[in-house]
Length: 237
Ligand SMILES: C[S@@+](CC[C@H](N)C(=O)[O-])C[C@H]1O[C@@H](n2cnc3c(N)ncnc32)[C@H](O)[C@@H]1O
Image (cartoon, rainbow, N blue to C red; front, side, top):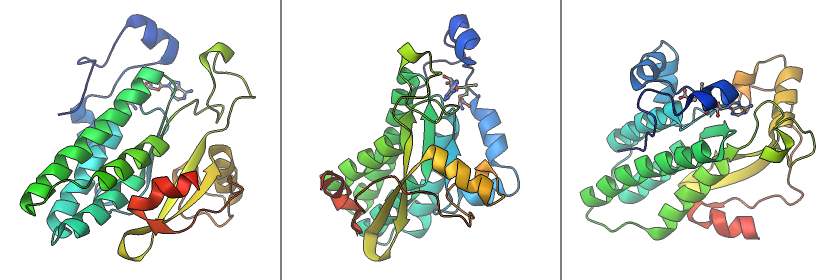
């Protein structure tokens, strides 16, 4: 069960007029994700997706559900196996949304889908939820779903009319899976990723994959490769 505040895809005429806010109905999302090539990528746990105006996460939520079904089926020999692959699936889903309430609902929806599947996996393995895993999942979702302006590449405040060029840049983390549930984190500015994709002659669809030009790293301090349950600790140093 995810939160959907606008059953007909519209919250108010004002929001449609100001922000083009019309949510995609589930059946269209399903049809689009079933397209040849996309369907296969939705089932590939490492495949990365960015929804640049993600609203309440119409696409991201469905992709997460598809990926978690794969985890349930193929990586469920132990709870550890399930957690490692489910966390991998989560790390690959990115969103940008201008409006605070939508960004929050998107975050919540992804979190709920993860929790529901996690509870079922725990039940199957007759184990309790590991709070560190739950927190790691929430941390990754919170880092990957960004309230910001996909056009200015910045976390513009409403008072700048979402047009300023001064606010904090949007920073995305790339989470590279290593052995045994360890992940390497590297941060990039969204603008840097777009520039590198352009320099490589690829399109924005290849932001963190298939680009030959290494985008400029954002953080001054490199992050240590750590187990996913340690990602929060590693962020605070
Ligand atoms: C047409 S809706 C689509 C939402 C979602 N992708 C879906 O399919 O249901 C467009 C969304 O983009 C957001 N939006 C509009 N301008 C934006 C911008 N410059 N950067 C990020 N999000 C933006 C709106 O708030 C709205 O939620």
